[in-house]
Image 1 (cartoon, rainbow, N blue to C red):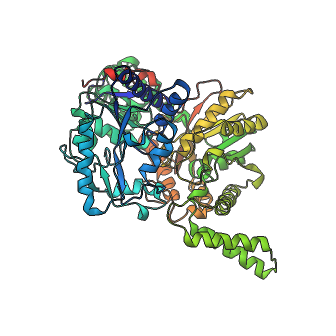
Image 2: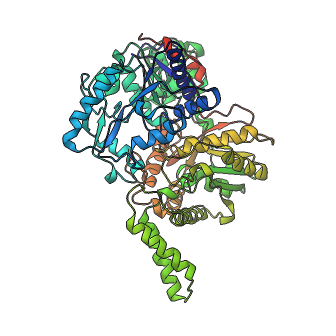
Image 3: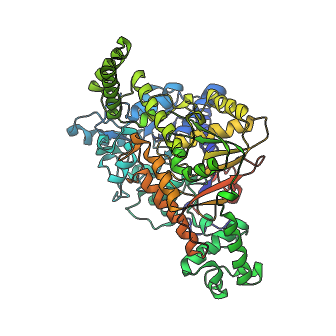
Length: 639
């Protein structure tokens, strides 16, 4: 497809393909340099974005003998101040997630130090730059991208001539890191980072971005003018920089969202819907009132000519849109259904409206909460429940030495706990119980029973930390056992990938793998969004209308999750409470249909549906339409 608006090569691959492809390129460099007696200088990035690459490199080291003994690494950045052994330190992150698992020499590892006195920082940053120069520069640099468009910690305003330095962190960056630090107030206000010039000196660069929450900043970095307010735009000047995105992060690229503006289009039903909805929005006309000139003046003559007349196309799109709308009478009834909820509140946040209707329709529903969500409970909630237990024991003369011992142990721990410390087992269990009781209370709002709630407690989540283990055999087996037991006809799965600490993506992976192994009849799969983003009207296969009263009941179910109320521990960049986001998004979806000329509804939820036996893909845009399946990264050049 045409990519004329893209000022830097962009490759769209599924998340796992990105990890394998970039890791293979790094392995190729290591093997080539080793064969010629040279060292490889590798630039690394911390955080959740490249962690899949590091896991693939570890696998290659263990299974294929990939040798790291001659590799010299330089990390992009580190928070300041930050002790290297802190749970938040990028030093610790890199050793736990890569260096401890390969045969790299400790003296070859370079990470900016966040534990130096302030008066020594400037000398340290000069030394860091000198160390890079002395090894001949960086061969291959991995980058992520922040919500401000920063690379490393080069915040808005960073100069293209900047070098390694101490920098103040933008407010958006600190809010984005709040999940890792259990609150924005605990995020450092500064960091030491390689500069833009330091990054651009690398001979080859790969920037990786995943999730629909990165789509807007990717479009700005790729298609916008070079500007200091988005440091990633400086990559447009690099001769061998490539951006790797998954389909979700590619959603806002012009070639994906508005391909008719840049060249010929391979029309299909979704693109026809996208085009007509877009045309309706920009002309401020309902679908059935669009005229031939509207199509001609907005690069859509070819689309109209496929249908002969504007009226025929308008009618087809209108009918396609209205067929997506399913009230309660058109929703499944008498079916066996599993709702997979990554956290104990995603079910009511993202699909509370349809869950209520499905229950009313007499379906046999099991809500499977995949993780405990215990790290998202504030310590003050634990103290509140401890006080309740103590008062209960006093008032009803229920005295247990074991209970008093647990209470005392928990109180001692909480009194000495620092932000980000891993909770002791007793605290983790209490927080888990808090989330479970809230989850049951949430579905009881719809008249469902506690027996319909299943708590899977997938092992990958049980680290006590924000960062989780990879999905393993035990996780898949638990999901598969539930499928074998319930033999569902419909499965609901979270399809949004903007979760700030990646649990939604990992829970989705566990369900996909279990369904691939499932020997029973393949169920119909309904993907929901809502906690972070919503499906576009053109992408959604089913739109479920909600009345004002139904939205109110859904909101009440969300209110049952009191530990997440008022101030959620992991809010992302949207500071509103989840119920506020839900009401705005559900009402906004209904408002779009109203503007398109369809019946006016109070609110709507949106779903993407896959039939049993179809490929288990979350997204409706095929990767093959967006880029090469396995492009030769080494050959990537500036267009």
